[in-house]
Every structure is written in structure tokens, then in C-alpha cells.
Length: 434
Length: 132
Image: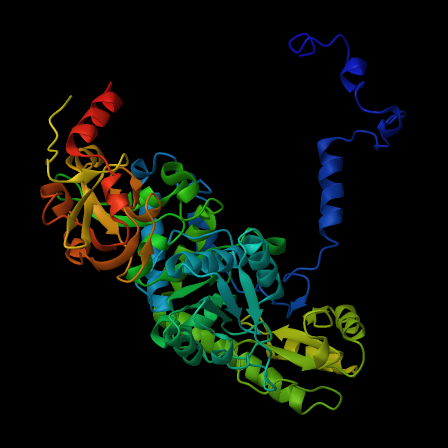
């Protein structure tokens, strides 16, 4: 290689780097070990992780612990499906395209909208793309954001808007936890309002009012959903007037995976289909009238439209999308709704217990889905440490996200939360023996 | 050069739009050359009435099965009317680009802008040079 680039020695190659930045001693690495010893060492390290297998799990805040049926992995691991994206010669992979088409179709059902794309990176980037899309559709550059947007989503939106000269306005949080009304913040320069449903701290937002406020000034209403299972129970964003629904679908059969890869989604009204970023799969018939699937409206995409494409920073999540599609097909509409009801029932049970427990409180009174803030008697970090000692990952310390609540923990209950585990959680947060 | 219809009574841009002045309004569309090169038109994205467009600037986009192309305003002014029928029947651009396939009417502000456009002879020459 040195010959090829015409450099006499390795030392000469590194010459341009000043002496003081160069390491002059050998790296301190442990001696090489055999495969058997290495595997044992990695297993020892892995065993130090807390997971849903080792702990009772009440941490949500954007990544949710749900049961994944074995069929999801078994089917998604088939080698015929092994690609993270749509293939580069997509039409030859009819199975992959069909899975994406089914995903788009189910997502339209869940969101109450007319057209969905072939997925996006994750909930945060999908939200940012939805904002960009609204700015394109309205040719406006002001964005009104509800109080309950996930702080990470907000960061990503800020990053995406960084170079575009857009103005970002945030609503205050009302006393019951819902966003203050957005109407006073919306003007004729506003591209969209963005509401997270349910909000980051749990309360269910008034999407219909936000949509009305947006439409009164010619703006679009974007609803972003971090806990996709909630859509099986709450009224669909599209039915409440949302123009774009987006968010995170990791809850549908995708493992938490230390925070990724996740599964962004986006759906909209047909009116805006040409502004929709990402790939779209359509159904058609071939010359012999047989059903087939194609990539459609690809002329909006970056490989054709370059800098004028609907997005230059998105792709689809082929494998995660496949898992979610299999998951949704297994659950069916009735199963999914029953699962969502179970999640809600667990949360309501936990809330009742919290209310009855001295030292604990529910600072936000608005109804929610499966996640809620719990006021704790001492520092949230101390309450979380107490719970961890008892084998419980109790939730998220809200010190950074909502300091005005006082010491509080964001708790999430799902179908994995057994009644005894909830009882132990509440006792640990309160600092009492279970 | 291949056969392109270039009516004598129209003006043209180098981006292949045509313009026709009638009673202070300018009718705008794309030329036969453009529609032949683009192939089957599937969508035309046009600005709403009252939108201001500026000579030489992008005012919309036209999508064929092959590509999406920008549309450039031949003159400046406010949009009076757009061809709403194109939403349902974009193929009219292929079938009759100088008639039913028109895009917009614009209230002309400056007659000199219109006069600055290419006439049929100059546009034909421009196409011949481009095709070489």
C-alpha cells in the first residue's frame, strides 16, 4: 500500500502529524485470548446490563417495553427479507415491496389518513421531516410546537431547522399537563402546529382544537406519536383534523435495542402526497393483469430530483418495518385494541395506587394512556436508586425535562407490568417496604 | 432537428415555456419540444391565483414519468387563473400543449418583459443550437 501511494515507510506516512500528538508507546491492550474465553468475558459483561429479562421495567419515554411474539423474529429473520432498506432494484423484490405496501395500508388505518410512506429513521427524524414537509406545502417558515413534544424530538427538529431561517415557537404547559391552547400562537406566517399525542409527560392532548387553530390560519396540523400503541385506543389523528401524522412505531414488535434502530412513520392526506418525503410503494397490475408492487412517485426522491427532492436525509427502515408489519398482522385490529386497553388498565391501576400512597402524587391531572408522572417524596434519583436495588427500572428522572414538577419520575406500564411488580414499584418509589 | 410545433404568434423562454399576450393577460404553458422531451406528464404543480411570480424564477413544477422539472415564469405579475383541469387530466399537456394544456394566466406588469422573450424564429434557432 505504501508503494501504491509512493510513501517510503509507515513513519513517513505519519510525519505530517506533530510529534506531541503521536503515541510513542505500545497500546495498553490485554493479551489475546481464545474464542471460548472471549465469549465468556462478553457474557460476563452482558450480564451486567439491566433488561426486561432481569428487571421489572417501567421506563418508557420514547422506547417502550412490549411483548414480542416469537413469530416476529422467526419471519423477519428469513434471508429473503434481509435488507435494511428497499433494494436498489426494488421491483424484483416483490415480497419486500408487498410487506412495505401492507405496512403503509395498516398505518393509514391507524392514523386515519390516506397515504403513508415506507417508514423513516425514527420518531424524532420523522417529526422533523413532517415540519419540513409542512413548510414546503405552505411555503411558510414559522412552526408552533406544543408543550408536550419529546425533548429529544425537539432537539432534532431544531437541528433540521437550523439552517433554514425558520422561527420556532413553543406553547406553555397548562396546569393539568396538556399544552396550553395553540390558537393564540398561530398566525398567517405559521406553517404548522406540532402536537405530540399523548404528550411526553403522558396527558392526552386536544388534537381537534390544535387542528382547528392551524386550519383557521392556513397552517397544517402535525401530530407526532411516540407510543404507537396508543393509536389503537385514542381517536385517530386524521379523524381529529391532523394533516400529517408521524412518530415512532418501535412499540409494534421492534425490540428496545438500547434505543435503536427504531421505526419512524409518516402519513398524510392525499392532497399532500407529492410533499411526502421518503419512499412510497404502490400496487398495480402487470401486462398479464397480475397484481404487483412498484415504487411510485419516485421522481420526488433524491436520486432523481437531487437538491429539490422532498428529503435528502431520510430512508426507510426495511427490517424494523417488516417486524412491525408482522406484529400488526398477528395482533389484528381487535387484538391491538385489547392490548392497548390492557396498557391503559395497568396505568390506571398504578395511578390509583399512587394516589393512595402517602408521599407520592400525580402532579398532572389530565387523562393519559400508559405513561404518567409520579411525584416522589425525595430526589427522583434517590427514588430510582431505591427501585433499582429492588430489581426495578422505575422510569425517567424528570429533573431535566420538567423541573417545575419537583422531584418526579415518568413511569410507563405495559402488558409486561404484572400487578405484583406495580405494587413493588409504588412501594419502592415511596420508600416503604413492599 | 426533429419536428416540433412552434406557433408563430407566441413568445418563448429558453426553459421552454410559451407565453401569449391577450388584453394585458399573459397565457403561459410549455412548448411542444418540452412535452415531447418530458414524455407522459402525470402532474403539474401550479401556484394559486393571486400568487406573485417573477420573470425567470421558478413558479411551479411539472412531473412526468421520468422526472420532475421546474417551471420558470416568462413574465412577472400576479396569477389570475390556473388551469384546474390539469389536476384531473395532466395528459392534456401532452395532447394539446398550446391549447387545453395551458397552465396559467398572469396579469402583465411590464410589456417590455414580454417583448424581451424569444419569438418563434429565435426559439427555433435556439432549439436547433441546443440539439446540435
